[in-house]
Amino acid sequence: MTLHIHDTLSGQKVPFEPTNPDRVTMYVCGPTVYNYAHIGNARPVVVFDVLFRLLRHLYGEDKVVYARNITDVDDKINKKAIDEGVDISVITNKFADIYNADMAALNALPPTYQPRATEHMPDMVAMIEDLIARGAAYVTDDGEVLFRVAEYDAGSGRYGKLAKRSLDDMIAGARVEVAENKDNAADFVLWKPSKPGEPVWPGPPNPSTGKPLPGRPGWHIECSAMSEAVLQLPIDIHGGGQDLIFPHHTNEIAQSCAAHGHSDPAAYAKYWMHNGFLDFSGEKMSKSLGNVKLVHELIKETPGEVLRWALLSASYRSPLDWNDSILDQSRNTLDRIYGILRRAQRISVSEAARTADEQSELLEPLLDDLNTPFAQFRLSHYAKSLSGYLDSGNDSAASGAKRDLLDLGYITGFFQQDPEAWFKQGASDDLTTQVEALLVERAAARAAKNWPESDRIRDALNALNVEVMDGPNGATWKVKGK
Image (cartoon, rainbow, N blue to C red):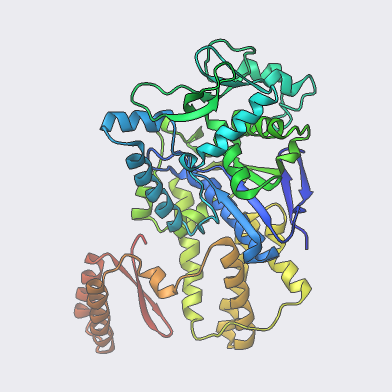
């Protein structure tokens, strides 16, 4: 079995071959923690969580190292801290904790490492020193350190290899950081002076004076330094959203390769994977457009597993239109499959070892560049088979189908909770006691054909926002909308 992934660097779907199968590494750019994450921010988390789970299944849980950083120094963080009169850590700790809790609600496993920019200042300063020493960066009169893009590119086109664009095109369309005394319009900031009221760190020595330049790092150098510090180079897979291809990932490659004297971009990361945008009524979801849906708010009304199913319902590289319909479809699908699993609770999971063909069939969708829509189809197929075996009383076949459903479910991040808990999400102990008592009364009323009493109980259950589902083994229930 071979995993094939679409590599942005080569522009092709290629077989994945880690540098060291005993230590498979992956780095994904994480959040800037100054506010709540919107559902678009959650897409790369869920996509690369599936990849993390798959790699652990293929190579062993202890042989996959996944880092997703926290950017905790940034202009927006600084402004919010100044506006609120607090240290930046008050802002960043609060929203990092919220972010991690929100992503956990989407069934995302925690990464192996979650490096923070403020914890890796010495690594950033050391890398900038190396770049200055190699002539790949220079210090301006106002104390900024800039990277020499033209010298790195040297007419080879390697600077734009990831973005598939020439240096001139990128200069024309770039949102580059403004800095005086640039040697070239494409040069970008590695280190810059802090503004009044902002945090300050001792930076690399100024070659002219030998004294450290006070200030803070630019955005791009943070990921280069953190990824190398926790994973070592080359990284096997580097991931993120398509909007990071340029300038962020392009600049990561340039500064990391230049710091080590490498000419091949693959010396930093062998494979690059990028997920598509989340659209809302045909527009990219973003705070600037005012059309955001915050994960923190969505999970109050919608189970995280429903959000996860919706996020994986399209190819990760394609745009995904986010709307109420996709959530309704996802909720109904999960209700149906959890309902089948509830019927199958008495069935023990088969412990028989899979043949190579069975293992290949189970993983087939995900080995094909994380084809999660196909994986969801397979999950529905396994659930349908399980239901059929239950109906026919074939417990042996039902055991195998349940195993397939739960195993593929685990790798994709689904169906790991108790079915009863799924249908009663958010139900307090008091509500559960009330509902169970009403169901007993309902059963007695129906047995006595006391329809007025049965209707009264139905109305009482509706008032509690509870839906009752009658089956061959009696009545079950769920909280409506959950």
